[in-house]
Length: 146
Picture 1: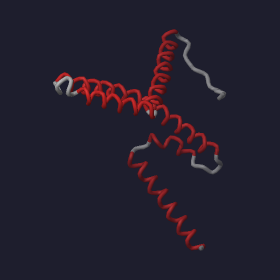
Picture 2: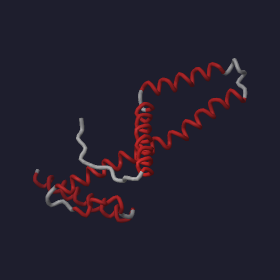
Picture 3: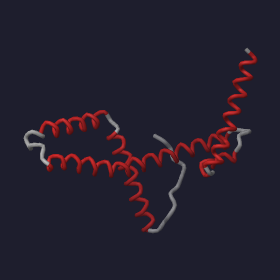
């Protein structure tokens, strides 16, 4: 079991309620994202489409028959955008924190790079080009050594 060395802040009832709602949504979004990304969920979706397609002749391919699948998929897609975005945002923040910790702990690392994601696109692109130069120089030195 992972040990957590952090404390949650906020002692007001409203803050605790907000934290509880946020924590509930985080867990819910994570569970849904995990479930939807499973082979079983994919097979279920395929089965629903097959049942819907084969039911077409029974309902004479009516507008209602088409509306059922269109409405269902639209609602599911709309809701999934928010759930998946929440999970991706959280995962991205966690990865950034892990990388920040690595940068912070390595002697000689440029600690000012810890908040690199807060820079403008132009500044990030300049750093990307700098690292491309480092890579090219490293390859050239390696090739020169044989």
